[in-house]
Image 1 (cartoon, rainbow, N blue to C red):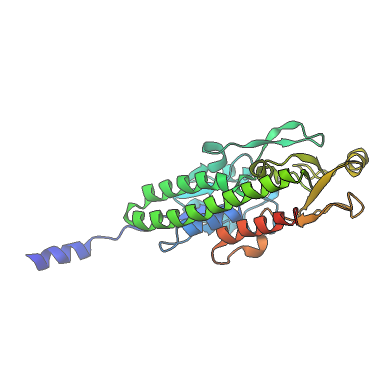
Image 2 (image 1 turned 30 degrees about the vertical axis):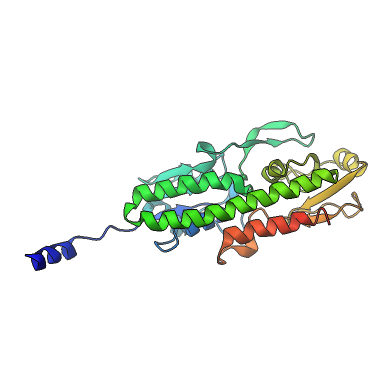
Length: 277
């Protein structure tokens, strides 16, 4: 009887691992670390493309259609997803559990669109991690222990990164440092730091600041740090005494490397410490 029971168990079909896709590279890397040991998501977007203008290739469309669940940022970051019909579920993390900030005009007043770059704040990623894990467990309860173990390890990483940025921001404020950013993509870092913004050079839609704005920034008086973007840098004659740091909001050089999440936030923290030293 025991032999028959064992044979019957072996005859039962194994539960297939969920088919998962994720959109922007940092989100895909976060999902991959939560899924470690069970599978990996289809990463839909390479690091060298503009998310707003991205067009899926046929193979990527098939990956979306074949997915059980697609993790997206939302907030109009991936408008192309709405054009793909299928039975998959889209979890727009920025629209369900986070607190998006409005994009800004050059006078730093809010505009109608939301800024989707929430992943730059590790504090926000704690919320995303929990939501991603819960959805994976719902689809794949057999691997609950693995997802929970990965979730716990990532939680420690994200809490440490959040606390480090908070400490860096406190040190900046003690030194009276304000920020000038080359692109309106860093305000979730700004909020985590708690450091005031004095000006920006490129807005949410990639429009460049005019001569009047550039002149106003150049005439600012005080302690500043300039945050450059890999594709956009402040003129060298603008606030020449201010330290300049480079932040890549995608972390392109780290995509596909082990422990992306820890290394991504370490890179951000290391760069921002250059504002103080």
